[in-house]
Length: 183
Image (spheres, rainbow, N blue to C red):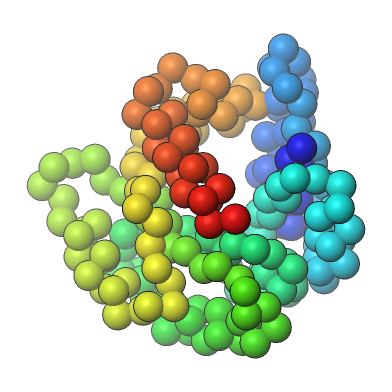
């Protein structure tokens, strides 16, 4: 059993769940909860009811991120292979260090997303080199590349593993296995 907690004020995860119910009723339903503010007690309660709880806190430091991480097994830090995203690392490492004071068992992993598929683009390699200076955020082996499938599935409430793009599907399957191996 998987429960998804949407703590991001943009609510894209909740929108995806609603689209799934409306446009893909033939697929298994996804249990979703919207919650903002302090998530710790909610996540501890959900932990008893679900095998996996996935939390979307948005791409920024927030009360939701910090309180969710104190009750989590894994913190996934998605980032683009770009100077703009990587410039935030020194500040974000301090956030991680504070979270680890409350949850020393938390496994932290970085994930490059929306990486260029262009063979001549060197930003991913350069970004991996930069991230090597931050051992607090070890990288997943998996990289999520920029593929239209990730956007195409959203309005129909599907995941890429339920879609026709074999490359995107393989990326998510490998990432999922990496996550399961950590937990």
